[in-house]
Image (cartoon, rainbow, N blue to C red; front, side, top):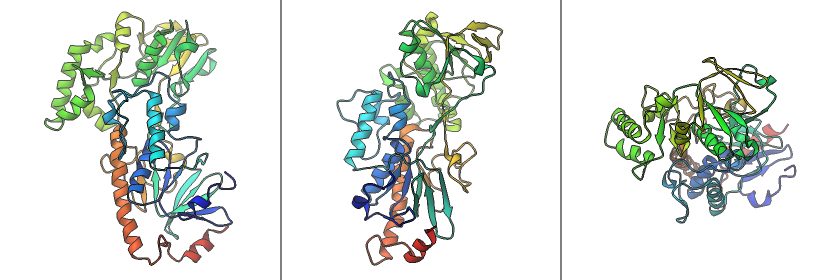
Length: 422
């Protein structure tokens, strides 16, 4: 984007000088996933322009490039809608990956959201002299009063350091690169991780005569996706409005044990803390079973304890077992990448999550906001987006009232432009 194409159509909102420094009259949003799109749409409803910077070549890149083919939403669509525009009525209760991507593309088109693609943010830092955020990509430096971090909790894959994995002769792949079990046909595959991704990958592998060995390192809550024809998540959300959280958790576990049986006997030990309380406190999501448990019961998916070390031809486990393995799939999740590019900010932890817990983690100081870090999925994203747009909207209207010309709110504009020249 060396020539900054499309500048003419956006010149009312962004100004560039010869030093490749762009003055943005609305907020800068980093990330064109669901969080960034939702926030941009809510801002647009308040007649506030925004600029989305996206490092990849498309919207919702995690969904488009880093998800497996059989993926569906784990929750009913009404819990996964973004603000102001719902899913098409003809979509099923649990939309597929491709349907969700289609919804995202329709959403961006409906609100005329046009991110700047292939703009990887290298560094973002607040300039206390100018009172603006400086956001640098490989092509430009952008300046704005507001910076909205929308890169989310799942920006980068987590690659664990497992003893001996470097000498393993087979294939090692993270689930971010897994598409289908067809490439592992007739193999013995070690799946490290037992979250929703690990369980679903194991289930997918079973379709191709694979023998999955799933490593369960920690305790895990497994719940049925539905109970008596109703979404388990929907039941939980309805109950917590009326009953204490601990009581709701006890009821969910009672129903889960009735529906699924005792998961401890399958090698899936439950945490002492209930599933909803655990998610609220730690962000650890319960597994919603879509068929993997029946394969575990039948012996088609082997549950293994933690890995002691990887050998050239397989793995040794902490219980003393040793297995020959053809391939390894890391279902070890994702992490935030905020600490790698957001500098001089104490609002985030070293793990790249807001220090303030939900529902107060969306706003920091000096015009900094975060969206999609609630550990509450797309419902949390929608809540953040609405709050951010409302807060910036109030500031925007105050600034407009204090200035005579439309959008000409930059203080001492000549001074600002002179200072940003190199």
